[in-house]
Image (tube, rainbow, N blue to C red; front, side, top):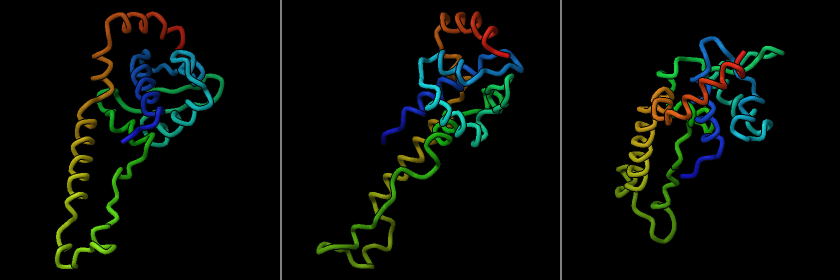
Length: 158
């Protein structure tokens, strides 16, 4: 499975927003500058995260973004699904029932083994991502990053 770069961008932005002082907002351009990202492309991902309820957006001159919920309740899966959608990555086409090697209807009463394995893997992957929160990721940041963000974020937030 390949995820878009938007997932990485969204997760890092969510982690940074989790460190903004209470009640503060970060503008889109500040987020883009912080990570050296193209603002127009980042905007698309921030909007998707806002629509999904991961971020709160306020427009206008004093506008910006913040997490919509406490960082301890926003999961990595929330961000992934906001960016990539919730559709399963595998859709069984039941090819076992086609072509010259087609299985009989009796042989296909049970769910396809390939589909079962892929769906089990998807559930495990989602469960793993659901178990990690943005607060948990922030806690794993090196101390030097925390210190730098504590020094710079108050000037960027409004």
